Image 1 (cartoon, rainbow, N blue to C red):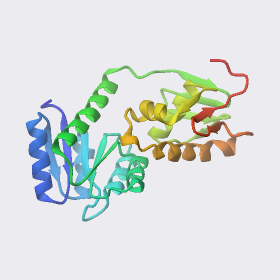
Image 2 (image 1 turned 90 degrees about the vertical axis):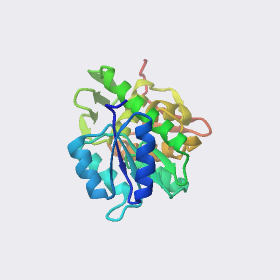
Image 3 (image 1 turned 135 degrees about the horizontal axis):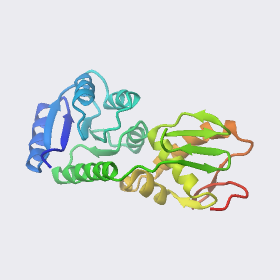
Length: 235
């Protein structure tokens, strides 16, 4: 694992020290910084495999750092490390592009396990050939190579996670997908049972899809999940 680079971002030297030592002991190559601006600079130039990111930094929030990196097209997995432990904070962090959320005080063993899982998923994604081609379902057309989605031939901008969610619906038209199944596929694990993230993301993509179609494409099946409704489509 010595070739796997982890960037630790925290304004508390003792946190940087203990997290850094723990991850190095686990075999990772670790760098650390104490501000958001430093994090953006290092992440852009050094391209670590994962970022452990404090939310409350002296110059900007970890959420702002994440948004800045995602705006640059940098999709490095981000694990938030924060004292903010409310469900709304967790959903906010995951919604703006974070991949996991660990609250302080935290167990070092749990932190290492989360890092291992995120890095493992990243490496598996990189070693698996990306699907290519075009998927067409009703008014939706998804271009794998260009990472674009068109609705009635109009290009619509989706975040990486929104793109994965729309693709999952398109791969399973007219099938009810439970929130847990969506989380397992799109986020790859269960966020400690926090299913609100699915509701938030379905709301986001509905706001982009509905104005461009005669009828809403995504229906809610109360107590069950969601379904992409495409009349006449057979898988």
